[in-house]
Image (tube, rainbow, N blue to C red; front, side):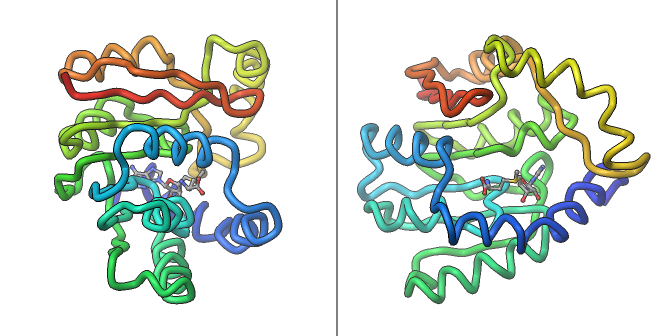
Length: 212
Ligand SMILES: C[S@@+](CC[C@H](N)C(=O)[O-])C[C@H]1O[C@@H](n2cnc3c(N)ncnc32)[C@H](O)[C@@H]1O
């Protein structure tokens, strides 16, 4: 692992318990629910799903509950992957899901009908590598939740990004607002067309693409 991916995996190893407590209290967040709805409306039943940056696996497990035939979750954080395995066992879904440590931008990914990324590209510096590698695994649908740079609240958040070194330190985690125009361009170049764009909360939007 290079310095950047080590920074991400260490950060989310540390954040995993706090994030899990949030999920126990409030359930899935707005972007995850929006992705789940979009996939349900676009033929989720009987489909295979790959979640890149799956965290502790709550969304992948929700998609199984809604009828996906199988799911794979990949994440850089070993602690998140361990927790995802425990959550799957607690929900009685271990037989239909596999969680593995890996880098969505460079690991060989299993081909799946639907590929999803919820709040992942904003942690990763290399937009092109992550979109190129993860979308290559999508047979039909690609759904991605990102901070949407065309929205007012996101423009305000972006003003503060140069200060994040103070909070996270020199080698630590960084939050990125990648231009949505570039995200759309990268997916169009890979043969996908945008089928929906839905706001989720103040900052995020969920983009759903279909392979042409
Ligand atoms: C903000 S968390 C979101 C986790 C989960 N999707 C959720 O919404 O609860 C971002 C996750 O993406 C993972 N991640 C970031 N870049 C990644 C990459 N290139 N490959 C795999 N996982 C990545 C991090 O380790 C972290 O668990």
